[in-house]
Image (cartoon, rainbow, N blue to C red):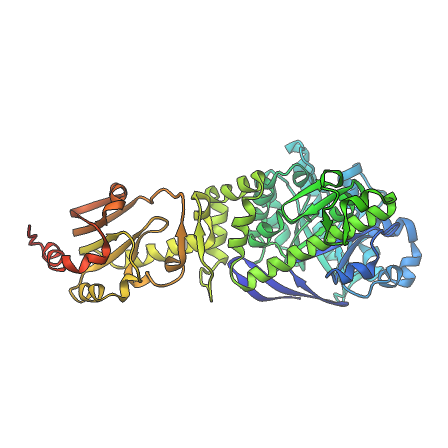
Length: 517
């Protein structure tokens, strides 16, 4: 069972209920090596992870019936939620595994896994399209068979089951996989095989994969992004609807003396010797002087600490309804991530996802900073556009309208002049560089009153009205060319909107069709 307890647009905080406890999402399942685990499980829990994942294929090959007899929790000494993978990662790495899908599914049930994964065929990158089509069809066949088998293997539904989608960068194949798999009653839907894309910082294609799957599968089910565990991509992935991650990155990087930081990964030797890794309390110099095994353990511990801190920050931003503000900051920390962020503005799938799942409503919302064109794709901005279009369309044909371009000390709707104009039946719009024409009825509500903009080209707008007056502060003269009037249109330039009261009679006369000099 999955319960959503907090939302910020598409992102959410949820509770995933398992037999060994509740997983609060967004969550990362650190990968546990059943053969040699450098970071003790108790330490992993202390670092903020109440859930882990291990490999049932390796468990079966190493422990066999012992794991069946003891159960996976007692075998590993872990009493919290535990997920098992089926060996698909080994297929990705080595091309095959010495086990069949039915056998490994049965084994996961027998060792009492809380969350099991079917043995799918992961889509590597790069990979020929014709092979991907064959492999995806085989994954779909296995998914259907697994659901049928579980009715007999696990009639009480003690083990949650994950249904992977595959297809990689082939969007149409991935969409087909997501559509077919989502018709089956899996507890969790997974996005398969972005690992090789992550290694090459190909965030744009990872984002496309997330959008393809998230826009297809049931909205109430959790989404698992396989093999992703880096603080650069996690905030954006959560903002797009991912709930669960799993990764061995903390350990793989540590084995290579690589250190995970919030905005990047660096080699230990590149750090100043006095630089302290907060997750383990040791300086780079101290770590370099240690033996290999102890150094790897401490770097892995630090890497986990960074990932835990990142998840805590993501959840806090969701609670503050400001995750997209954090995503925008994060996107500008790496060029590859920024390219992925910019691509959202050109993505019909993202717009579809926003219109389907986002609300645009904020409680105690933070300032919305529009730094450039890329930020116009943010859900808050898109929803503002939806609301404006509906409102303006509902106004019908306008006889007269006043458009104000410039800065005002307070929301214009609260001024005496605004009240008088409204009583005269005049429609008043404020021009906003990010949103276009904003009716004053919305000018003091989120996000219009909380938006600041920098380095943004004015938005082109059209106004169909019998008689329009545009009042422009002198410093915004260049903006007038972005407004196209269908009907009579008069432009009045003023030094400051603070003096608008002095033009009241002139405004009235123009809008009644009797302009005075």
